[in-house]
Image (cartoon, rainbow over all chains, first blue to last red; front, side):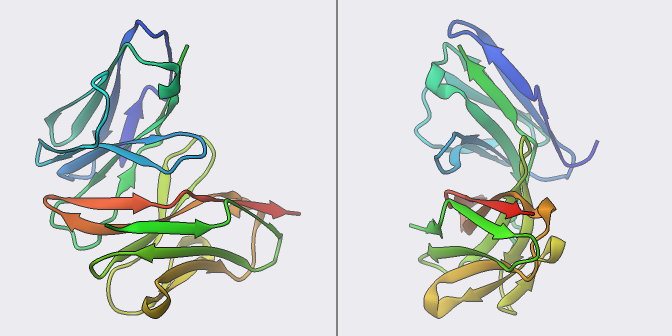
Length: 114
Length: 115
């Protein structure tokens, strides 16, 4: 495996379900990000973990709960979602201290909330 | 606070024609600037980046962009469009914020290439 891997690629859930999105990076990076991509909206930064510590929580509703057990793995736990939460959820990673600012993205998890 | 404006949510060009996608930014510090490309059902892939040095940067697939500080612009160009260039393109600006890269993206421009 190389790069950033996200699973599942597609997820359909009801509003009362509990599910999780998983992200794994194989780049040796130490910062990981969750972005939400909705139609006709800019990419929204949701959470950032740097050196396994959450450093950004961008006013995200509590029905989204991130978890970063180590620098290679990032989860997004989902519960009691709303239909407007349907979107593409993108995970990214970067190297803290890098002077380029480049993010490396996974292919995304397409979430549909019924 | 930094921001990015991409003019034109949709751009259509004929195959073989010049591609020009516009991006203007605002940043309180010298910016790092990026163009990312997103193909359908995929994540974002870095096309090119400007950090310091030469203001004309070349990227993958024949794309290039020029950083113009006086115009706060970072427009993306390609001399001759290919069908495979059809995708959505995002301009982004980044600055260090604590222990991570705070990246702000534009709203994206969908490029259509007409045969």
